[in-house]
Length: 160
Image 1 (cartoon, one colour):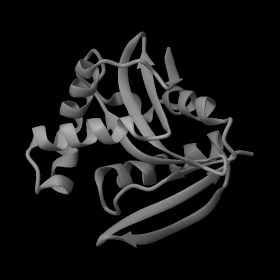
Image 2 (image 1 turned 60 degrees about the horizontal axis):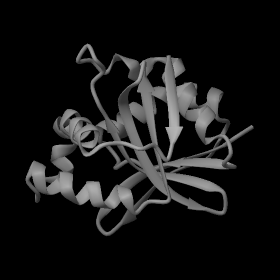
Image 3 (image 1 turned 60 degrees about the vertical axis):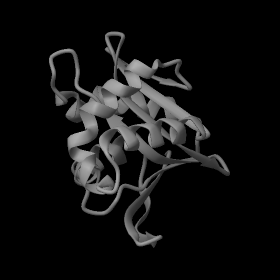
Image 4 (image 1 turned 90 degrees about the horizontal axis):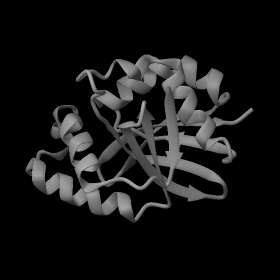
């Protein structure tokens, strides 16, 4: 069973495990940093965000996300996808995994996803978009924006 918890108590070891499991897909975006430098930068960054969430499968943390809240809209700015206890990320395509996140965030009017355009998370977002529309609601915004030389693929879903 997947359980999404907002503002979870998590350990440095859990953050490190999820970060290390995610590094292969993230490393191109942080080529100016070593893995350890990027890990410490993001560890501090996540703690400053308005909302943190985690998904657990049978009590084992597999996903950590964080973002900012503005006018009852949650903007997801960071995510770590860890391996499950079998060493896999097969849960990524499980509707119950996505549903647990949707249910935890449904107190917000809308959810914004903004991965770096062309990144592995952007590709994942493209793949799960039909499920996200079903679980959260219609897409109100689907555009690319550039901030400080980085292009983001922004989608906004409003809860129905």
